[in-house]
Length: 274
Length: 282
Image 1 (tube, rainbow over the protein chains, first blue to last red):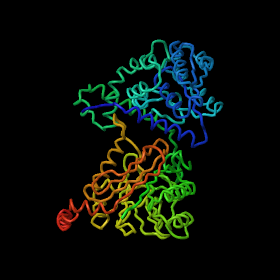
Image 2 (image 1 turned 135 degrees about the horizontal axis):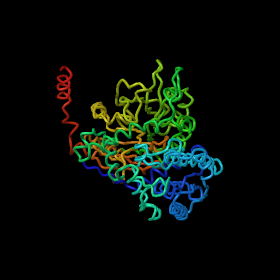
Image 3 (image 1 turned 60 degrees about the vertical axis):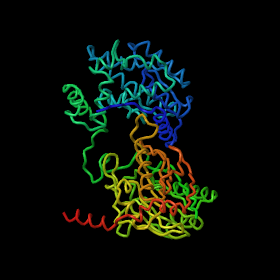
Image 4 (image 1 turned 30 degrees about the horizontal axis):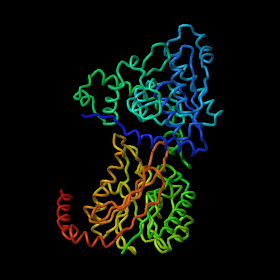
């Protein structure tokens, strides 16, 4: 099967900037708040928001922890300067440390989740201060794999890049005014020194994006994927990751008691009346 | 004879009929000032598309005393109007509908026949399927109307053609999807291709009206089109922005095309009937 994830970046930009403008202005806002990590996903979200709303209406927030890479901070600043957006830097170290110090030996995973959730708190606070909606930075690859923190980096009011695989986000980045160092460096959550996404996951984005496209978009079976040259254990691992992380893509379950229940049969889009 | 056709690709407010009505009256005014004879709005143009549980609360009947249709009837004194709305019948069933208004009167209502209930679509949960379809006479000749999924099936346009329609008016609220390397979404490629094919196969005029704007994460791509009986595209609206697109339909083209290409003359309806009877009796 010929899997080609090439996207027309002009068309993607047209749709996604239209989406950001529509969904922010129709509820009475004009501004966007975005966590700016120095990575490619947040750079693309910022660039799209700047194009949609005007750079002066976009606030990129750098939220370093004490172990965050200095390169990340520098790349975030270069991105903000290049786009002409506003930038704030708010350290999350004191917020996170107060919890970490209570429990010596806390796992890396818990620390990472704390950082992601501390950043969510900062962004939603800035949302009120800057009168802007939080624009998300999660891509389709990480959403499907569950390589995210629930109520952390997954939290946003709207997400323009959530239906683009990582390799497609990279294509979009190359078409926009994003520093080369941001595009070229290995993707990382930067929760600890030397961390990279691909080492964490055990495969490359190039590989997994093609496989996800076959499983999710093209509805291929495990056998179809193996016929296409994918290793059985890789296909099974990715399939299991998708299933296991379904809870991260959903609102909390509500126990149904009445004849009309939020989430089941009380059905309205968020854009109801706008 | 000529027909100056205006296709209104508008963005709607979801469930705000009064707001959408005012936009209709504004576009009708623009079309009138540009000497249009007929203006066609997209599917569910008075209500918005992803209605879900809003559907039953925004239904109207195309009657003279209905507060939403009253100003539209009044506006139709000097320009024919096709609007998309939720129709509620006397037994309180709800339909996705298109109404054709002319000279202050209702000429025809079409109820959507095929309600997509798969993938991102859930129309069958909220709406009733139309029971039939019919072409109808207008001051420009015989017309047939279809709504979106209706023309993803080959039989409705074919039946309207056999019923005498020389002008097919299609309306959609088409959620765009299928981003690849091309400069149009897969949805736009397919709809434009199939619309052109119907013009070719039926040697008829085919106009497609489609909305723009967003509802949650769904984008609507616009890009209205008009094809003549030779399959030539004679109008094309922009993508992703509100616009009023005008097309001048030279209705004498029907004579010229069908003199050259007598597909309608040679169509063997008896053969279709015979084979359908055989297939259905299996």
